[in-house]
Amino acid sequence: MFRYACLHWSIPISEGYGRRLRFLIFDESNGKLIGLFGLGDPVYSIKDRDEWIGWTAEAKAERLYHVMDAYVLGAVQPYSRLLAGKLAALAISTREVREAFARRYRGREALISKKRREPHLALITTTSALGRSSIYNRVKYRDRLVMESVGFTSGWGEFHFSDGVYEDLSEFAAKYCAPTAKNETWGTGFRNRRELVRKALSKLGFSQEMLNHGIRRELFVVPLATNTRSFLKGKSDAPRYFNSPFQRIVKFWRKRWLLPRAERNSAYRDFDREEWRLWKKEPHARRQPKSV
Image 1 (cartoon, one colour):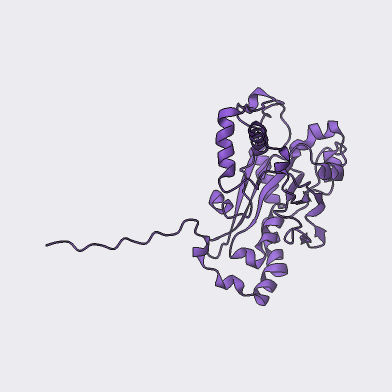
Image 2 (cartoon, one colour):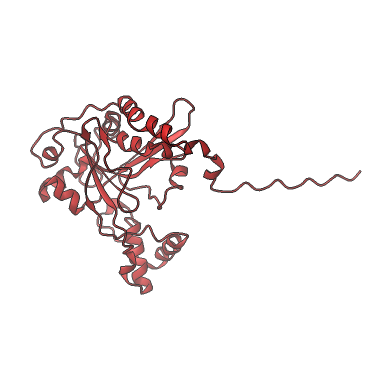
């Protein structure tokens, strides 16, 4: 179901890499899917994020482990028409998410460093799909700003290689390009989509400028503790977490966004589930009468 929902996103969704946690949000009244989010390992260097934290190179190398990136985040139809995207945005900051992270990674040894760290999830980052985000902006829980905008990406990426183009490049790269593995424990394939596209373009004689799609995506940080920056800089031993249970978040969202939107705009009632069908139903073949 997670993968099926991702197929409806406005830009192609990668499954992420490294550590991964995936969440589905359901409507208890009818069992229907409201939204989803997936957390994966963050990119090592993001200028605006790193400047917001203010950490040294040594602190980042040691404590980037405590940061995750929401590589997919949002609501599905018809709940998106009821501002359920804001519910999904609030949900990544909840107690249940950091507890799920702790359960999954407690006692585990890092693949490359071989270290065992106490799994304190302290910060989640995410980017808008296209340009400035109207959903993520001004997302508050009571008086606390949950998602803070810290800048924009530079407009480079590979999501515009779509409609079968990426698949063709992938097939070409598998035959004619060598992946760059900096550590044998990473495996033998390409590290990510970016490396694959870059190498295929180079081999084909195309400019790397083709990776510049020009769409600057807004970058948000979601601190999960009052001392997130201090902890990530190595000045605090443990995060002092906000107490944000999911059920309390839901009640807040329902009163703040859901009910007012439902009263003002009834467009959600016009949703036809056939709009979400990825493949059209084939008409049943007309039965031929049997000969007697």
